[in-house]
Length: 283
Image 1 (cartoon, rainbow, N blue to C red):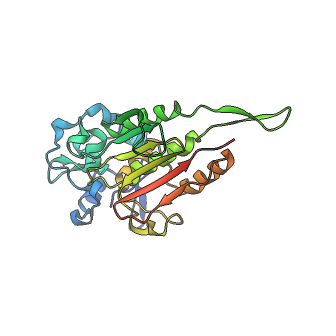
Image 2 (cartoon, rainbow, N blue to C red):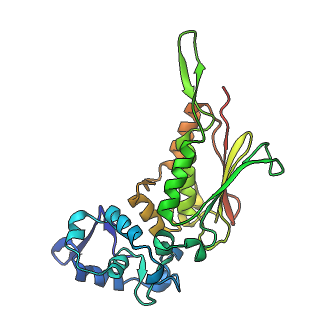
Image 3 (cartoon, rainbow, N blue to C red):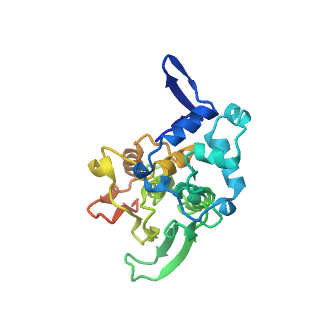
Protein backbone atom coordinates (compact mmCIF):
# COMPACT_ATOMS: atom_id res chain seq x y z
CA UNK A 1 0.00 0.00 0.00
CA UNK A 2 2.44 2.70 -1.14
CA UNK A 3 3.66 5.20 -0.25
CA UNK A 4 5.20 3.65 2.88
CA UNK A 5 6.60 6.18 5.31
CA UNK A 6 9.57 5.35 7.57
CA UNK A 7 10.63 7.86 10.22
CA UNK A 8 8.57 10.51 8.52
CA UNK A 9 10.07 10.02 5.04
CA UNK A 10 9.11 8.04 1.94
CA UNK A 11 12.13 6.23 0.50
CA UNK A 12 12.20 5.10 -3.13
CA UNK A 13 14.51 3.36 -5.61
CA UNK A 14 14.26 4.10 -9.34
CA UNK A 15 16.96 2.20 -11.22
CA UNK A 16 20.28 3.13 -9.61
CA UNK A 17 18.76 6.12 -7.81
CA UNK A 18 17.77 5.81 -4.18
CA UNK A 19 16.51 8.68 -2.11
CA UNK A 20 13.58 10.50 -0.52
CA UNK A 21 10.44 10.76 -2.63
CA UNK A 22 9.49 14.18 -3.95
CA UNK A 23 5.90 15.32 -4.47
CA UNK A 24 5.69 13.77 -7.95
CA UNK A 25 7.08 10.45 -6.70
CA UNK A 26 4.51 10.36 -3.88
CA UNK A 27 1.71 11.15 -6.33
CA UNK A 28 2.72 8.22 -8.54
CA UNK A 29 2.91 5.89 -5.54
CA UNK A 30 -0.50 7.04 -4.36
CA UNK A 31 -2.02 6.30 -7.77
CA UNK A 32 -0.70 2.74 -7.61
CA UNK A 33 -2.98 1.83 -4.77
CA UNK A 34 -5.58 -0.70 -5.84
CA UNK A 35 -8.99 0.18 -4.41
CA UNK A 36 -10.21 -3.41 -4.00
CA UNK A 37 -7.09 -4.37 -2.06
CA UNK A 38 -7.62 -1.74 0.61
CA UNK A 39 -8.39 -2.72 4.16
CA UNK A 40 -11.51 -1.15 5.69
CA UNK A 41 -9.61 1.68 7.35
CA UNK A 42 -8.20 2.70 3.94
CA UNK A 43 -11.56 2.64 2.12
CA UNK A 44 -13.42 5.92 1.47
CA UNK A 45 -15.78 7.17 4.16
CA UNK A 46 -18.40 8.40 1.70
CA UNK A 47 -20.03 11.68 2.70
CA UNK A 48 -17.30 12.68 5.14
CA UNK A 49 -15.81 15.47 3.06
CA UNK A 50 -13.62 18.48 3.65
CA UNK A 51 -16.31 20.34 5.62
CA UNK A 52 -16.27 17.56 8.25
CA UNK A 53 -12.52 17.77 8.93
CA UNK A 54 -11.02 19.53 11.96
CA UNK A 55 -7.89 20.96 10.35
CA UNK A 56 -6.06 21.47 13.65
CA UNK A 57 -6.29 17.72 14.33
CA UNK A 58 -4.65 16.98 10.99
CA UNK A 59 -1.95 19.60 11.59
CA UNK A 60 -1.05 17.98 14.91
CA UNK A 61 -0.99 14.52 13.37
CA UNK A 62 1.07 15.60 10.35
CA UNK A 63 3.68 17.12 12.67
CA UNK A 64 3.95 13.78 14.47
CA UNK A 65 3.99 11.65 11.30
CA UNK A 66 6.20 13.63 8.90
CA UNK A 67 9.76 14.83 9.32
CA UNK A 68 10.06 18.63 9.84
CA UNK A 69 12.17 19.24 6.72
CA UNK A 70 9.61 17.43 4.57
CA UNK A 71 6.84 19.65 5.95
CA UNK A 72 8.94 22.77 5.34
CA UNK A 73 9.41 21.85 1.67
CA UNK A 74 5.76 20.89 1.14
CA UNK A 75 3.76 23.09 -1.22
CA UNK A 76 0.69 20.89 -1.47
CA UNK A 77 -2.73 21.76 -0.08
CA UNK A 78 -4.15 19.95 2.93
CA UNK A 79 -6.11 17.39 0.89
CA UNK A 80 -3.05 16.39 -1.10
CA UNK A 81 -1.09 16.07 2.14
CA UNK A 82 -3.80 13.85 3.62
CA UNK A 83 -3.84 11.73 0.45
CA UNK A 84 -0.07 11.26 0.69
CA UNK A 85 -0.61 9.86 4.20
CA UNK A 86 -3.36 7.52 2.97
CA UNK A 87 -6.08 9.44 4.80
CA UNK A 88 -7.90 11.13 1.90
CA UNK A 89 -9.57 9.42 -1.08
CA UNK A 90 -8.94 11.58 -4.16
CA UNK A 91 -11.46 9.81 -6.41
CA UNK A 92 -14.38 10.13 -3.99
CA UNK A 93 -13.30 13.46 -2.46
CA UNK A 94 -13.69 12.27 1.11
CA UNK A 95 -11.53 11.03 3.95
CA UNK A 96 -10.81 7.36 4.38
CA UNK A 97 -12.34 5.56 7.35
CA UNK A 98 -9.05 6.04 9.22
CA UNK A 99 -9.17 9.74 8.35
CA UNK A 100 -12.74 9.99 9.67
CA UNK A 101 -11.66 8.39 12.94
CA UNK A 102 -8.66 10.69 13.29
CA UNK A 103 -9.88 14.08 12.04
CA UNK A 104 -13.66 14.32 11.65
CA UNK A 105 -15.83 16.41 13.96
CA UNK A 106 -17.99 13.45 15.00
CA UNK A 107 -16.40 10.07 14.11
CA UNK A 108 -19.29 8.13 15.66
CA UNK A 109 -21.60 9.54 12.94
CA UNK A 110 -19.57 7.54 10.41
CA UNK A 111 -18.26 4.68 12.57
CA UNK A 112 -20.97 4.20 15.22
CA UNK A 113 -19.10 1.62 17.28
CA UNK A 114 -15.84 3.57 17.50
CA UNK A 115 -15.92 4.29 21.23
CA UNK A 116 -14.97 2.61 24.50
CA UNK A 117 -17.61 1.73 27.09
CA UNK A 118 -16.32 1.60 30.67
CA UNK A 119 -18.40 0.08 33.47
CA UNK A 120 -17.37 -0.76 37.02
CA UNK A 121 -19.50 -3.38 38.78
CA UNK A 122 -19.86 -3.98 42.51
CA UNK A 123 -19.78 -7.76 42.10
CA UNK A 124 -18.42 -10.48 39.83
CA UNK A 125 -21.20 -10.53 37.24
CA UNK A 126 -23.22 -8.33 34.91
CA UNK A 127 -26.19 -8.54 37.28
CA UNK A 128 -24.22 -6.62 39.95
CA UNK A 129 -24.86 -3.00 40.83
CA UNK A 130 -23.06 -0.45 38.68
CA UNK A 131 -20.63 1.76 40.60
CA UNK A 132 -19.40 3.89 37.69
CA UNK A 133 -19.81 4.13 33.93
CA UNK A 134 -18.64 6.38 31.13
CA UNK A 135 -17.91 6.51 27.41
CA UNK A 136 -14.76 7.58 25.64
CA UNK A 137 -15.86 9.07 22.34
CA UNK A 138 -14.74 11.64 19.79
CA UNK A 139 -11.75 11.72 17.48
CA UNK A 140 -9.08 9.08 18.08
CA UNK A 141 -6.25 11.34 19.37
CA UNK A 142 -8.54 13.02 21.90
CA UNK A 143 -10.22 9.82 23.10
CA UNK A 144 -6.88 8.01 23.52
CA UNK A 145 -5.46 10.91 25.51
CA UNK A 146 -8.55 10.98 27.76
CA UNK A 147 -8.54 7.19 28.17
CA UNK A 148 -4.85 7.12 29.09
CA UNK A 149 -5.32 9.84 31.72
CA UNK A 150 -8.34 8.00 33.15
CA UNK A 151 -6.49 4.68 33.50
CA UNK A 152 -3.74 6.47 35.44
CA UNK A 153 -6.30 7.35 38.15
CA UNK A 154 -7.75 3.86 38.62
CA UNK A 155 -5.08 1.74 40.28
CA UNK A 156 -3.10 3.44 43.07
CA UNK A 157 -0.25 1.35 44.46
CA UNK A 158 0.00 0.39 48.13
CA UNK A 159 2.91 -0.80 50.31
CA UNK A 160 3.03 -4.48 51.26
CA UNK A 161 5.58 -5.75 53.84
CA UNK A 162 7.90 -8.48 52.61
CA UNK A 163 10.06 -8.60 55.74
CA UNK A 164 10.40 -6.82 59.07
CA UNK A 165 12.42 -4.04 57.49
CA UNK A 166 11.34 -4.05 53.85
CA UNK A 167 8.19 -3.47 51.85
CA UNK A 168 7.28 -3.24 48.20
CA UNK A 169 4.63 -1.34 46.26
CA UNK A 170 1.93 -3.38 44.55
CA UNK A 171 -1.27 -2.50 42.77
CA UNK A 172 -4.35 -4.66 42.15
CA UNK A 173 -3.83 -4.17 38.40
CA UNK A 174 -0.63 -2.86 36.81
CA UNK A 175 -1.56 0.37 35.08
CA UNK A 176 0.72 -0.33 32.11
CA UNK A 177 -0.97 -3.70 31.46
CA UNK A 178 -4.49 -2.28 31.30
CA UNK A 179 -3.33 0.59 29.10
CA UNK A 180 -1.52 -1.79 26.72
CA UNK A 181 -4.52 -4.09 26.39
CA UNK A 182 -6.86 -1.17 25.74
CA UNK A 183 -4.55 0.28 23.07
CA UNK A 184 -4.36 -3.15 21.42
CA UNK A 185 -8.15 -3.33 21.42
CA UNK A 186 -8.44 0.09 19.75
CA UNK A 187 -5.83 -0.86 17.15
CA UNK A 188 -7.13 -4.33 16.25
CA UNK A 189 -10.92 -4.03 16.61
CA UNK A 190 -13.33 -4.42 13.70
CA UNK A 191 -14.51 -0.88 12.90
CA UNK A 192 -17.29 -2.21 10.67
CA UNK A 193 -19.06 -3.42 13.80
CA UNK A 194 -21.47 -1.14 15.66
CA UNK A 195 -20.41 -2.63 19.00
CA UNK A 196 -18.00 -0.67 21.23
CA UNK A 197 -14.89 -1.88 22.99
CA UNK A 198 -16.06 -3.06 26.42
CA UNK A 199 -13.86 -2.21 29.41
CA UNK A 200 -15.59 -3.88 32.37
CA UNK A 201 -14.17 -3.87 35.90
CA UNK A 202 -15.66 -6.55 38.17
CA UNK A 203 -14.89 -7.19 41.82
CA UNK A 204 -12.27 -9.84 41.00
CA UNK A 205 -11.16 -9.12 37.41
CA UNK A 206 -11.11 -6.76 34.47
CA UNK A 207 -12.46 -7.83 31.09
CA UNK A 208 -11.63 -6.07 27.82
CA UNK A 209 -13.63 -7.21 24.83
CA UNK A 210 -13.28 -5.82 21.34
CA UNK A 211 -15.36 -6.60 18.22
CA UNK A 212 -13.64 -8.80 15.69
CA UNK A 213 -11.81 -12.07 16.24
CA UNK A 214 -8.25 -12.87 15.23
CA UNK A 215 -7.23 -11.46 11.86
CA UNK A 216 -5.02 -12.96 9.17
CA UNK A 217 -1.72 -14.34 10.41
CA UNK A 218 -2.75 -13.51 13.99
CA UNK A 219 -4.66 -16.81 13.98
CA UNK A 220 -1.33 -18.09 15.36
CA UNK A 221 -1.86 -15.91 18.48
CA UNK A 222 0.14 -15.02 20.53
CA UNK A 223 3.20 -16.03 18.49
CA UNK A 224 2.39 -13.89 15.45
CA UNK A 225 0.49 -10.66 14.94
CA UNK A 226 -1.27 -9.06 11.98
CA UNK A 227 -3.05 -5.78 11.35
CA UNK A 228 -6.71 -5.53 10.47
CA UNK A 229 -6.31 -1.73 10.45
CA UNK A 230 -2.80 -0.91 9.18
CA UNK A 231 -3.44 2.84 8.83
CA UNK A 232 -4.91 3.11 12.32
CA UNK A 233 -1.97 1.09 13.67
CA UNK A 234 0.42 3.45 11.86
CA UNK A 235 -1.38 6.48 13.29
CA UNK A 236 -1.25 5.13 16.85
CA UNK A 237 2.47 4.46 16.45
CA UNK A 238 3.04 7.99 15.12
CA UNK A 239 1.17 9.33 18.16
CA UNK A 240 3.33 7.18 20.50
CA UNK A 241 0.51 5.01 21.84
CA UNK A 242 1.86 1.68 20.47
CA UNK A 243 5.22 0.45 19.17
CA UNK A 244 4.21 -2.27 16.62
CA UNK A 245 7.06 -4.52 17.72
CA UNK A 246 4.75 -7.46 18.52
CA UNK A 247 6.04 -7.80 22.10
CA UNK A 248 2.96 -6.50 23.91
CA UNK A 249 1.36 -9.76 25.05
CA UNK A 250 4.63 -11.30 26.28
CA UNK A 251 5.39 -8.14 28.24
CA UNK A 252 1.85 -8.03 29.66
CA UNK A 253 2.26 -11.53 31.09
CA UNK A 254 5.68 -10.71 32.51
CA UNK A 255 4.44 -7.54 34.25
CA UNK A 256 1.43 -9.38 35.68
CA UNK A 257 3.64 -12.15 37.03
CA UNK A 258 5.99 -9.64 38.66
CA UNK A 259 3.09 -7.78 40.31
CA UNK A 260 1.58 -10.99 41.70
CA UNK A 261 -1.40 -11.26 39.34
CA UNK A 262 -2.39 -14.51 37.67
CA UNK A 263 -1.54 -14.58 33.98
CA UNK A 264 -4.07 -12.94 31.67
CA UNK A 265 -6.55 -15.27 29.98
CA UNK A 266 -7.41 -14.81 26.30
CA UNK A 267 -10.55 -16.11 24.64
CA UNK A 268 -9.80 -16.33 20.92
CA UNK A 269 -12.42 -18.98 20.12
CA UNK A 270 -15.07 -16.58 18.81
CA UNK A 271 -15.11 -15.07 15.33
CA UNK A 272 -17.12 -12.05 16.50
CA UNK A 273 -14.96 -10.81 19.38
CA UNK A 274 -11.65 -11.04 21.22
CA UNK A 275 -11.75 -11.19 25.02
CA UNK A 276 -8.99 -10.82 27.62
CA UNK A 277 -9.44 -11.28 31.38
CA UNK A 278 -7.01 -9.85 33.93
CA UNK A 279 -7.42 -11.03 37.52
CA UNK A 280 -6.68 -8.97 40.63
CA UNK A 281 -3.41 -9.43 42.47
CA UNK A 282 -3.70 -10.91 45.94
CA UNK A 283 -1.18 -9.94 48.64
